[in-house]
Length: 157
Image (cartoon, rainbow, N blue to C red; front, side, top):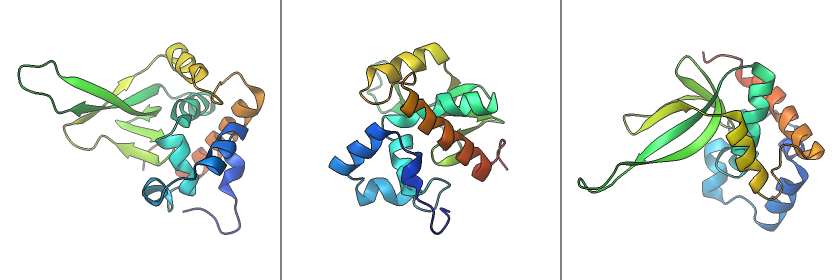
């Protein structure tokens, strides 16, 4: 749960603040995270463009391997199965630490897979305002990773 008097928006990169000023999180996007370690701004790091950026910072902070949560999409029987990357983070003991805290795969439709840091960096660099080599963006992600690890721990409990 976010601490009283703590402004979690200070953990967002400048581009995220500008984006959220233009397009605030909807109640649906913010509600699942309101009581989590990062509060409602986790919506930007979790389901927004910042997921990969936070994953890279968490990897740097913890040394844990980078992982992605894949979700199977429904497809006709005669079609190839499709999976979608839902979020990225770092993994430990079949759990993933991401913007929403520690979580395990939810059911048979989700699974964790390892991901490559270089590929994740390239994906982030392609998104406006999420370049992990931008000093202000990287500093915000590192501060968020330190805060998240302090709140959620280095391993799932």
